[in-house]
Length: 274
Image (cartoon, one colour):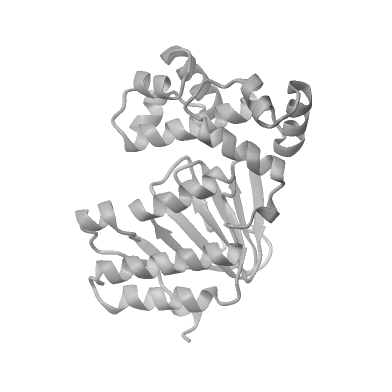
């Protein structure tokens, strides 16, 4: 296999409308070793897989910091606020892949529902799978979009299988059940009575347990998830701010705008304009 230093960044020269709408696509992939490597964004229309070859990668998202070591990787939804960079000490190297597309959405939504993003994984064979995808991308100026979509899907499924996302052992059963309830009722008004009842707990014990698991109150967590969904609606739909506020069951547009600004630092209108 070629040295990882041979993996210069590959950028897709053209993506058809058909591919963007129906297939899995990648606009870029490659290798990074610049010690000043730092990405800090509020949103970017892509998902990302990064795999560490040497050194240490640090990824920050959803209030958590992850240190990724060699032989390990991380999958992130870049449509939400994110930051990643190399640890200051030592030399670090990663290989990375941007990907998106309609078939990806079901997988990403499932991971969001299980509160599993960013998804960390350990895989000694990832480099081999990545190399196969990279060779396909670099072999032709315009690689076959169907073949490339299948290759991306294969790599994504390999990561999910390695991370064993279908097994909830890595997450406490309370946290998993609470997360699933929240995402199933995200468009509804936030109510503690129904939530606690669903969890078969008194409101007091439910709130206490929830804070232990999520380091915030249930209503704070629900609001954050509503705003995360609102950001995606602002970016990817033509719904008005008032319609988004209504869909997410805020009292009115003013209430939605106030909460959005408190949690993001900008108004919904400014966020939409970029």
